[in-house]
Image 1 (tube, helix red, strand yellow):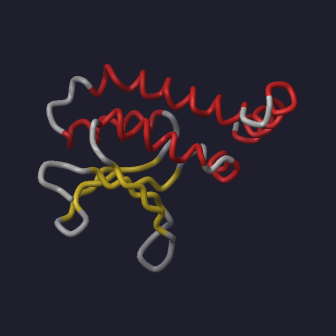
Image 2 (cartoon, rainbow, N blue to C red; image 1 turned 90 degrees about the horizontal axis):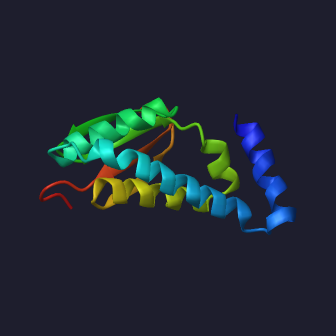
Length: 134
């Protein structure tokens, strides 16, 4: 669970140094990318690749969906991420995850945090560059 993971990461600091938690998180996202690679290699288009990635992320506890509209383009909208508390404590991990997503998709991805409100619940949008987009 997240509480155990946070405690574990903090325990690493006195043993391996202050940068140990972030090094471990970096390794984790690299391994994620390596696990995703063979599954995403089967995709024939960016939309198919992103849809597969959203499904893989759902299996690891994320809750999201792919969405397209003419104004905002193609994106993955995530409403829950099991590592959110870890991201709160180690914000550099957000960039590590984004890099793994970009490298897995082979395109630029823009991450935007959307606050909750009348338009709906809080979420994170991953805007994905597709053919001719942005």
